[in-house]
Length: 363
Figure 1 (cartoon, rainbow, N blue to C red):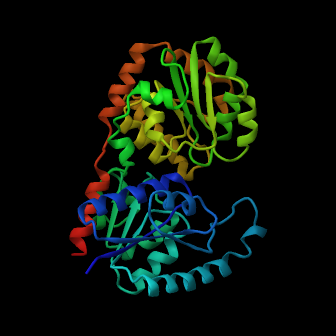
Figure 2 (figure 1 turned 45 degrees about the horizontal axis):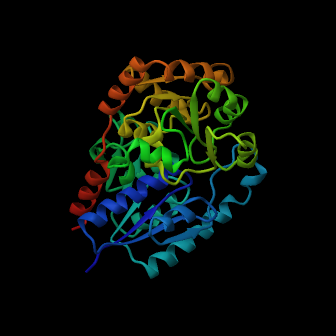
Figure 3 (figure 1 turned 90 degrees about the horizontal axis):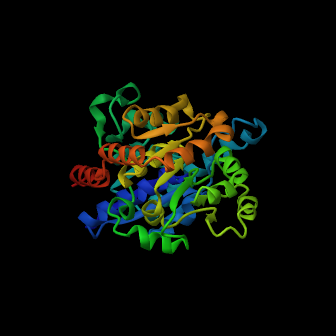
């Protein structure tokens, strides 16, 4: 009988892309495995998962809104409704295993699986565990984490250190720098900066870049700029007519973006840090200041300590980002050192480690 696996979670690329990487790795080992993803209706997984070739069902669920208590009034009803929806999903697609990758939809899906005695597996990409994963950990079969020290959140006997799964296109990239620059319509003779604020954008980074787009040209630099969806039209209008800037709300071909880049400006979410290390790129990190327990600062500091990156605090972006970017771009010794040390920190087979462990467990 073919194994059926449900993968639940999403909300950001940091949850979605590892989920897809795990599915692809399991598929490579057991091609007849059937998958169904479950995500939150209206979130980006509903678009990105089908693009990767997998079926997804949406459920009516949302997270706690910390800025507006009124918006949380409907949460209990949404949660109850989501459990009924998950029951129907399990009836039509009875799983042999359920994998949770974080995000709102993880909770009702894994909770029902655990109530039914179905093996559940959790992947926690961050150095600070998410609330849904904390709640589900006690009854989980196995918990995959990126680094040591996660036993302060999870039962030590259930932990397996695997690193974070990275998209195959990035982990096994073959595209040349010249091809990548051609893809973005940029000059092969200029140094290229890649700015990525995460799939939902980073306002402080975007605003600092928008103020200084002409300075890139004056310093013989060009920019690949992923703005995220919020205010994307405004940022695109700022770059209108500038042939040294490629700008869009989202980059689908991240392997090409990394291949084109001499330097990356990024938030310090776990998946962004992982991908930058696997791609072996020099980086300037701007940690998101409101991340739980300030874990993005910890993520960035791990690379700064090993001379693999620079870090700028969010309030300092407007005054420091441009100068730090230009200085680093014009310093080939530091660029090379950061690239070498970044690559040395990479784990690029996490997806395979997780896939093998899951398949061995549910044999």
